[in-house]
Length: 389
Image (cartoon, rainbow, N blue to C red):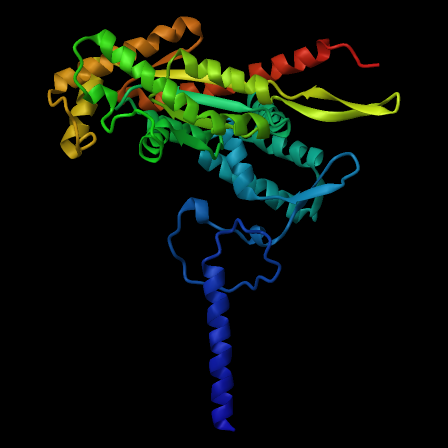
């Protein structure tokens, strides 16, 4: 009998240990687990993102629509990400999201409408000093996502100007999951197809003149542009925002984006029968928002970053031009060519190592402004359209 008791105690101990490990590793964002048992654990250091709360173990359902036909489970993490889009600092957004869920649970509001949720959220935002300006941004981005407006952000520039960092940071700030690098498209086309592309980047090669360099650059741009067609069409059709980190851009890239948008922005709907036969007509979809940005860096900073990159690792392992000054000259030639499209609508942004955070913050606000203008123009066009009889 004593042996059986010891066996049962061991089994119970293993069960408690398994549940303890499960709770210890719980991130606090997965709110779909209905069978959570709380245990006390020794205090451990954890990152703020993974910090959990007892309120994470309680579901709050948010009902949508006038008839409350659908609902979603409130997530602190997703709500805080939405708040950071409005330019609220991340640590404040996390606190506001927790305060909202605490308020709802403490008042037994486990089923709440979307409008009531937003009323309480906006009060908490105002209490922390984030009033009308931030509330309007939140409403604007909510409308943007609900309308599934296609958004294409082109972050353009030469090598070593911070394209990857800025594209990644903007994607995080704007809560956009899709970032595409044309470098990857270039390599895929070069290795998997018979596209006439060199293994060495164009600015690492030697040319007899700047005109020859620009001509070769434009030729490669046209090839890479075709490789982007699939991703662009999908973004236009599904209304999924995408950030494209571009070092292969020319006047044709924006035009192909606009052409792709016009081809895919409408959806076919079935109309009523006329004389016993049905016909189909095109239902216009949301007009896509396309934001091209060219990053420009001063020669001094550009050269310093390029030399650091050469020191830490070779550019591609097959660099033909070994002279740093020659590389800078090639990059400057391409940069000047890209900046020449400023008169055609491309926004040129000066980037410097010492003012990088300020530049990122400015870009965040600029993109929000462009999105707002795009949504407003779409609403104005719809309001001007005559009502169908």
